[in-house]
Length: 102
Image 1 (tube, rainbow, N blue to C red):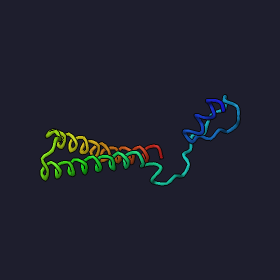
Image 2: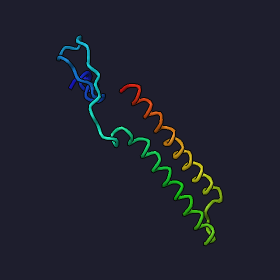
Image 3: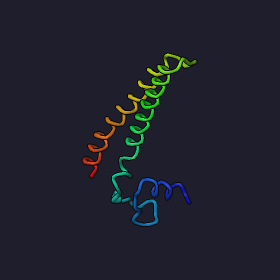
């Protein structure tokens, strides 16, 4: 496949004819909510998992004297919270983008 048609397939454009000189109609196909919001949802899930891992490590550190670094819990909690906040901020941006572009 040529790069022109791969570009068309990737961004869901429809060509009016096979000639590249003819303009394109940029209609978005009807897709599910998951197809549109999957990236911020995945980012938030990763954040929740990292925060959960930080909580588990914290419980293990308190119950057992181990060789775990004391800085690992705050690092896990901070990185997890950053992922959650990025996902939560990303959702309204996508909603506004969807309203603007139809």
